[in-house]
Image (tube, rainbow, N blue to C red; front, side, top):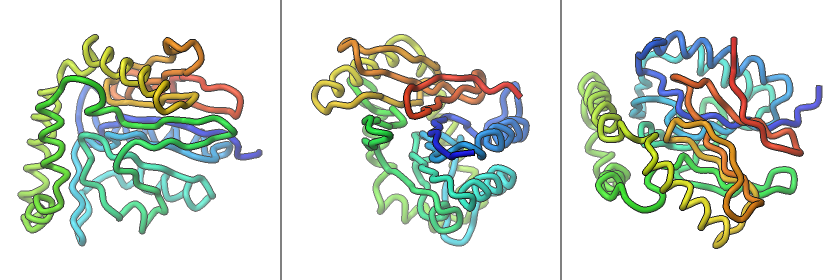
Length: 247
């Protein structure tokens, strides 16, 4: 089978136990990855793949072995994999690149796919409002702070990361509310005019949606999540479809 499709997914939040434990969700995600490996040319993981993550130089957080193994299988099979840092896993560095051949993105990108322009972003901190988060994000992205954090013992550092992740989630408990959705849509509307693209792909607010923006030609796609919706988007070279995985 020709590998011609491009897949997009976000907000796995692996490490977070909800109605379906992280381990159960990991198995479902791995099953989905297995289902697309025969026809996937490119896979975009658009942020918050992990609910908390800090990458030490010589220590990798425990868990996710099935997930990493499947990504390695896809990468070895020729699938190009892109990983976007989200607000929960912004401290990803070079492990995935060195071990799995994954391309890491610190911020939004515009990629040409089959002659169409895709604006791809996790979506956190875009648009108006949420100034406190934007300030905290600028601090957490500071390389000096990251260095100081890296000298903490992993047992303490990873535990602290889990607490910070929970606080971040609590501060964004209304992230899929109408105000943040509106801010993201407004940003996409303006960017479609000032930058120019055909598709706007994002995650973050856990609200799967596929709609045409106000210019009546640009498509907005929020990928949803894998805690409630198990949703993803697929580009087949002609059109973008928002789908739900049912194992």
